[in-house]
Every structure is written in structure tokens, then in C-alpha cells.
Image 1: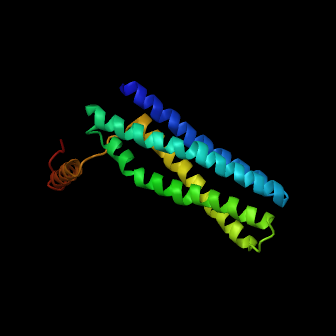
Image 2: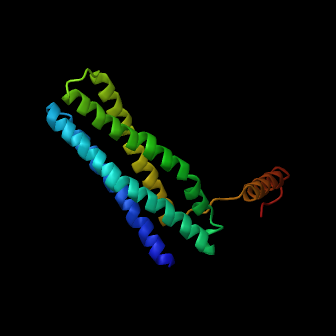
Image 3: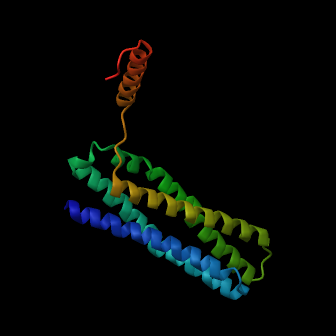
Length: 181
């Protein structure tokens, strides 16, 4: 069961990251196109967002939480808790920085196509926000993958305190002319 959940978690991560990269590519291609093509491309980006990124996000979250809850080996490692604490950032970045701008870009371009008055600066701002959100989500997911692979050992405050006391004692010995060690 542990391997299955981990596999699902990793595949879903690929879905979020792949969908995010696809949106970046689509938005890049759309920038030099005529309005009808832009509107179609922004709709395509929104479809990828709703059809791939969001379902993959749900799978990432569910499989990650289930893995931590089900397997005691994930209860104590600090890296696992760091990943869990990054969950709100993942959610916020996805909904505010990815889904919101994708919806806005699609809506604004459709409104422009329908002949309604839309400030082009609004679309440009939406695309800047969305691009930042997509890069942020890619960075956060890459950081989560790195944590899963390298699993760093995070020192506890007591370990830092013990190290500091040892260094202070060594300096005190050295200042007193005694050999350290």
C-alpha cells in the first residue's frame, strides 16, 4: 500500500508540474497571436488547469496525507512535516496564482472577442500574475520533490544548543591554554 500511495503521489506531482509547464507554453505562444487565436489558447490553458492541474493537485494532497497518516515511518522525520507544512502554500499558489489567472485570461479574452470594452492592461496584469503563479508552483513542487528524494535531517533546537555549548567549551579550553579535545 505504501508503494502504491507513493507512486500515485509522484504521478500526480508530474500532472501538476506538466500542466503548469503546458500553461506557460500556451501563454507564451498566445502572446503573438491575433485575438481569436489568443482566446482559443487561453481557453485551452484553462481546460488544462481544470482538467489536469486541479485533479492532480487533489491526488497529490490526498495521497500525501494518506501516506503520512498510514505509515509510521513518516510520522517523525522532519522532512515529511516540512512537506506537510508547505501544503497551504501549494493550495494558495494553485488557486490564486494558477487557477484564478487562467480563468481571468479566458474570460477577458472572450469578452474582448465579443466586442465588450476591456482594458488590455487587465489582461496583461492577469498574465503576469499567472506566469508568476505558475513559476511559483513549479518551484514549490520541485522543492517538495527534492525533500522527498534527499530527505534532509533537520536539527532540533537542543542539537543546536549542544553544538553551541561544545564550541564555547572548546574556546574556553583554548583560551585557558588547555589542549582541546
